[in-house]
Length: 287
Image 1 (tube, rainbow, N blue to C red):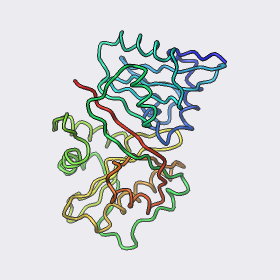
Image 2: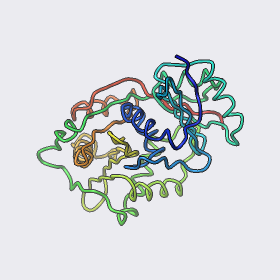
Image 3: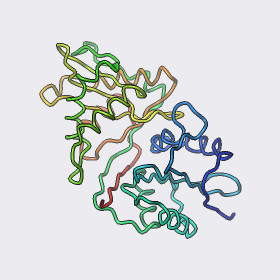
Image 4: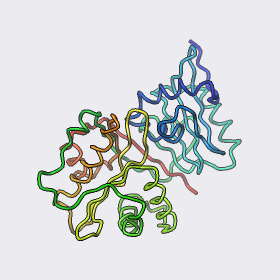
């Protein structure tokens, strides 16, 4: 059967949405960026595009070229010469070079080989997921160590320092500088469009967990952070459990990516019912 790579058009939207839905354990961010929640109509902005591999009229692979230079391949282990030609043509026509390649590790490596990209800094994660039934069973500690509630837009000033500490510790690499304005802008967007939960002691937010992408079948959890001086007291479990209950109320499960060397976080997620699925990776390119 001959495979053909081409740009996804409006009439392909339903097929792409259904195909991504079954792969959201590691492609939730792809689905969210293309469709939003709960839209079945692509919401890609200027400068973004999706290419898909069609075999017999069915999709068998896709790559998102997002604004800002982020590339998200979902290749399902298939790489071919036509893909290399397609990506080479598209990357040659883009005004911006890829800034990062994100996805399941095997797909990231395959895409970089096809597109002849060499990463400057790979960051390795582990994919973990939990279905809707498991998310609804994930219980917070019997005695909550703090007040846990959903964050409101009015919580922005109190959450800004916590978000900044999270980004400095968990997100920024040796290639990136902290940008306080971008950090606050991202938090504003999250409070408006994502599920954000916090734990507070004496009115001060000391832990948080949120969704970063709200997909079709799953939602991607992230931004999980507890202030260092209060770790090991159940705050992380309490706030993640509250987030999972919120996600489960919509009939969805959750997925997340945790750094492979973060044994404490992996233990927490396993205790809540998450299953480890395999390696995920973000490769940053030279500016």
